[in-house]
Image (cartoon, rainbow, N blue to C red; front, side, top):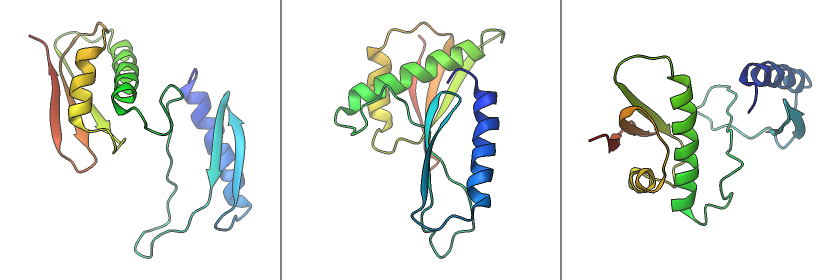
Length: 143
């Protein structure tokens, strides 16, 4: 994504228009926001949930069918480390990176192996993965 602020602004506007149309369960829309394909659809909510908007942003470089989990773990991890390294360029001192793992089919062991297979220079002394269960696992430590 080239411009996250533009994307957020356009996404909000598009969602507002869609919601104002009072869509029904099953209604959907495909649109282009900041040069990214976006699909919006309405699903049934569970009885105990409050109204909410839920979203997923996928990585175009991954295998959409998760047929090769180790490769996807490497692609996802490399992308996250590069992006976070860039964001932390001006930070002085030691850095640790914590990443929330929302790809439930890929576990910390896959990412621990992936970090050994990718060759990206970074300043992170430690890298942690936080599962959606709240469990924290360290997958990397600079020696």
